[in-house]
Length: 263
Image (cartoon, rainbow, N blue to C red; front, side, top):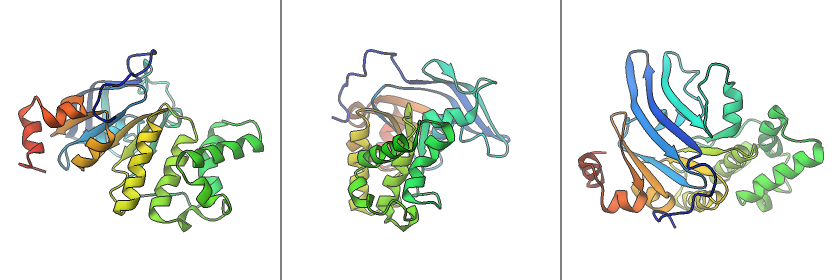
């Protein structure tokens, strides 16, 4: 259950480690000396007031800040021990291993099938058409979309409802069989019913994937996250089991935020 201690597997202690990461946009420092660990098969929530650096830190985990003019990242982000910012590392290969789901559903202007097949095609993750079709079906099955779209795979992804589009984007992210899946406020543009469906899906996917989710919704963090990190003014103030963060926060800023003193 979220907030409770969980067996993170017998492999490495963490899937990803963030060590002393600073993020600058020209002269502005958005993230300051961030340290963070992501364990196998967990949901880690990044929580904090608006503008505290949650999304910027999230984008560091698959080098999505790289294309932004003036962006500069220092420190280390280790994926299974390898620094994703090392000079010879290809950012495209990093993004294949660390998928991203954005705040608003953003299906490609392609068919439902081609949305899911896009990553495996780019990275060569299949041998033949039959295997590609199997990857598409399995990815859609994992998000509960298969039965809803199996008879219209050639229709545009944009023809789906908002909640279905977001599940399509999650299917697209997991089609590459990534090590991590990043989600940046994935329910903020959805109605309550669609949001609840996505939350249930996040918990189900955590059985096989590491998930890091940015959320402004404290109740959502309590429902879906095994651990929660609280950020304030670009700093990771406190990280712990979700129940501990909400019931017995150790830092004054965390207590103030949870008490509604700022948002």
